[in-house]
Length: 404
Image (tube, rainbow, N blue to C red; front, side, top):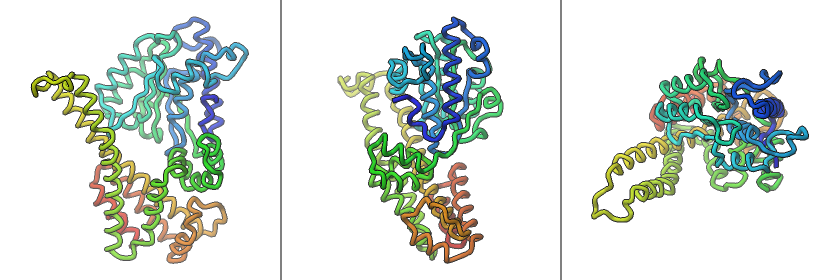
């Protein structure tokens, strides 16, 4: 399977990236250590910015491109497409174990300046395999201001054979000075039919289930996959879609808000229960604490544990926000469907399985009321981004849904 196969509905992007990978290979073959060889200079560059709506596949595209840059398939000698998916270069990149490809993720709310300075220092070294050193940051919008400024130095003074791959929701989520030095690729929301086909082909989902999940996932491939294979994810979606019918009075509004926030908190606690304890035990074992030192902690361990607990707390906060974010996207999808019905659209609805509820809300008020409810959901998302207390933000939204 080629590395591009999971990139759904992005034919133009795949075409650009495969052309760039060919140009990069020409540089390696030419034995040059800087600019891309010959007339291919316009196809390949040292920094790329991948943006697009949630779930469109920014990180998937960046990882596939990294694999194509490291591809060693013998078919390339015959004009084959870089990114075969079978050679050692492709396999190790896709499994995230390639020595010259660094994947940067943040479990917490941000990526700090210390981490970014270390990456810029790493980028100054020559790739061990003699091809390309690739640094993939899959959440460039989480860089702190200081971290972004540190990254700028690495991007504006590129090292030979180093490629930066940045992923963000939109171009506005990165510093102007950084994005001006990157080749910008915009991924689009894939069609529901294409997502359903991927779920059937890759995950073995039944076609009817795949179609329902793809529409409910609203173009988010990973969200669609979870809805197709995870019964709990489907149950939580149905709970969220009950909210428009439960906000008839203040009591219903507050109860719905509390349930949403409690669900997000439970998700974070479930993740912490399975991951945090293991991380802490592994850290202590690395310091030799498991061997026993008469109750005395090894030197440096207390500080390391404290730093780990700080990261775990930040990760729990991010998990709560992401769970709420998914719920808000489900609500947006519901009200978009309501608006479509009110305006007489005959196209397919994202939440066709909830048609009775959609019809009930659509006939209860004018389109203007639905637009106000959509704005209330968007306002809640903005409030959460500004670190407003989640319960207060969600309560304000549910009350607005009632008043809409």
